[in-house]
Length: 292
Image (cartoon, rainbow, N blue to C red; front, side, top):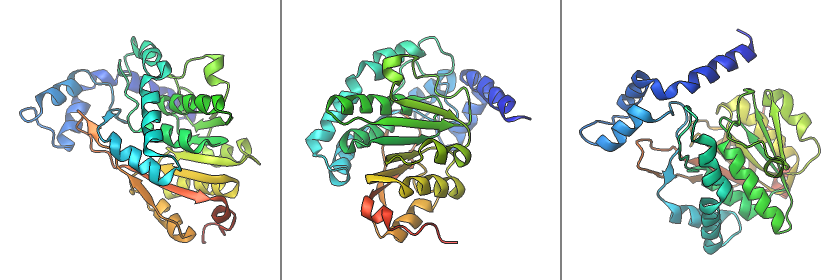
């Protein structure tokens, strides 16, 4: 099946996920969620939740996130708390997002920002000139990053976002609004083909690796970012260590591999956490590349 037809088929199936009760029942069984133990969580997910591939949730450990940011992103705990308040009261991430999903069958009516809060705080604290997002999916992460960039610009730190995905239907949550998207470049295609050409010569300050978490993808995407770093480059990947690439890179660079594990609030999912590398420019410039 051609790639465009495959993407269309996946999109059509995703639109019906709210009705895939048997699939959702199997998911609940896989995570050992029982009706008698957690009836509210069980029934809410089984009967009406549209998510069967990637889960959204509120996080329950704000204080840990703020402390993590203060240790690693060059801000204070109070700064980080302010960024969280900013994200949670931003009209684009609250009322306008709810308006966007209200009549959609394939998205939650109230879509929580969840684990993207780490992305938001990192972008606000480090103010990267260019953010690379590999993997768009519905576009929640893209909106979060675009809003962070807009706030950065108001403080005199301009930046832009380049997001890549193979699915032409990805990013449907991002409103077609010139003000919201003026710092956004959406690219359809494989990162192996498109990433080097769309960021050639620009200093990269942050990369969110959210394509399939394979060594092949991560080596290529991290490698592009490390070859053209800003004053520092922040690399974030969401496998929580399932893929060993970030750990291997930290050892090779001689820097600390960081791990933030968010806690999902009122959800059965136990997030694996996100691995983070904060790479100074001098360290990135001295990087010899991946060993053969």
